[in-house]
Amino acid sequence: MGADKLIVGNWKMNGLRADGQERVAKLAAAVAAGKSTGYNMVLCPPATLIAVTAWQLKDSVIKLGGQDCHAQASGAFTGDIAAPMLKDLGCSYVIVGHSERRQYHRETSVDVKAKASAVHAAGLTAIICIGETDAERTAGKANEIVASQLADSVPETATVENTVIAYEPVWAIGTGKVASTDDILKMHALIREKSKVKSRILYGGSVKGANAKEILHLANVDGVLVGGASLKADEFMQIAEASA
Image (cartoon, rainbow, N blue to C red; front, side, top):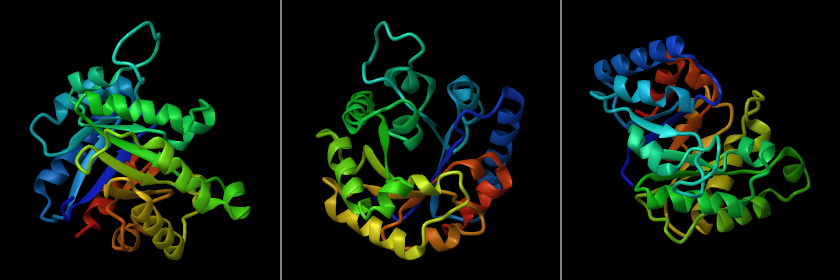
């Protein structure tokens, strides 16, 4: 797996060409000029910005990722994007099973597993998201839910090289709430124990420059999946450099 932390920025449905290109330019310049080591950076812009971002990153070590893909490689699926299409644009990673997809698009772990298989078939790395809601945690079912999602979302094609697990407590996404260090330690240990393959495990949920260093240096935390803070180049760099 390597010692380097994986720092993934999920822009979600944010960004037009002007602000997206400005953000990428700042990040590429900062990474190229930076003296800090210990991290690998991945940017996951909305689909409309993937091509232009790929062009901007052609001479950068920053990698590119998609936010979702269809389970099929091609077909009559209007509005969807296939994993081979993302690879063709220069992507190396694809996020699947994000809680917003599970919640708003009613995606099940079976759906996520099929998408992750498609990502693997295209020769890309799947970032498979799992995590419990506030109600599930309050009911004492957090471990059960996460273990179940992990078992049902990771396909047989998963290896250490092509799979990353992202633990994102749903109640901490975009809410300003952050799981306690004890919560993160316990859940990441559970995921490490239950994982079919010993993939990297990321933490996602209101990660910011102010809390990144504490989170990134916890046991079994191999990186972070960052939402809102990844839209601010300076703060996202602060998070990445906290890996050192």
